[in-house]
Image 1: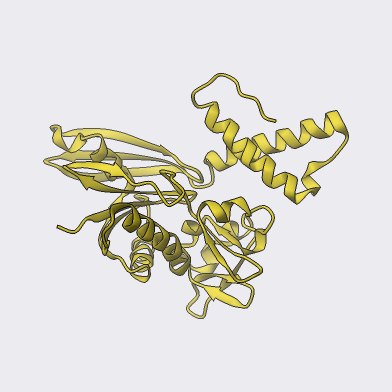
Image 2 (image 1 turned 45 degrees about the vertical axis):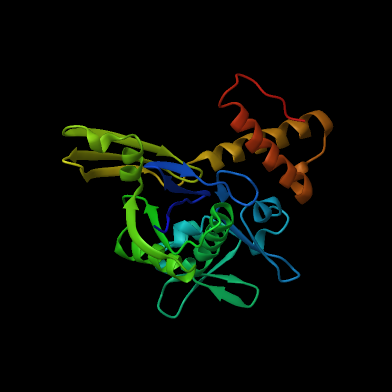
Length: 275
């Protein structure tokens, strides 16, 4: 039987898995990582980069590097005025009023950008498994409305995937913990991601999940911690050496990577060094 790819299409990172003998197994991408940065970049030479290669040049090529596209999925331009101020790339109003992204003289819809991330994941999964993948299940935040869910399905379709189902992220997390096997209960699922921080209250009974309430901060996540650490590094360096690194784009790219690495190391250690 053909495998169905399970995809967590995140604001900052995405992840994929398949069922192997009744257990979900995370598939590494072509770079050998369990997560793929949800970033698409267009270089001066016209090359398209997706994932880690796109992330590595993000600071030096800000106007042509699209990240956090999930914030614009299925949204009208007039709804995302605040989001537009938080990204360096150009967001424009499409003829139908949707928010689209303009890179050079080309305009892309959010599902088109998302499909590039999904396409990479599909290709990497096929290479790893040694078989064609045509079907997928994709997760979305519980608060996504119908047009945001449809936009996610559209992204899958453009990437060559038949999206069998759209699953709420807290429901997927509950399933992963085997909570569908228990008797009736009410649980809280909290999700601290790269770009968002969500909490959902779910009622479970007879294997059925009902989302009772959701809340959170759609502009708070691990990326914000990176940003604070990076700013601290800039301030400290200026204090000690009298040089302002915030004006040096190459230095900022390295600082951003160092800040994220330090944050990850501090998840399992009390202290870390940044060179």
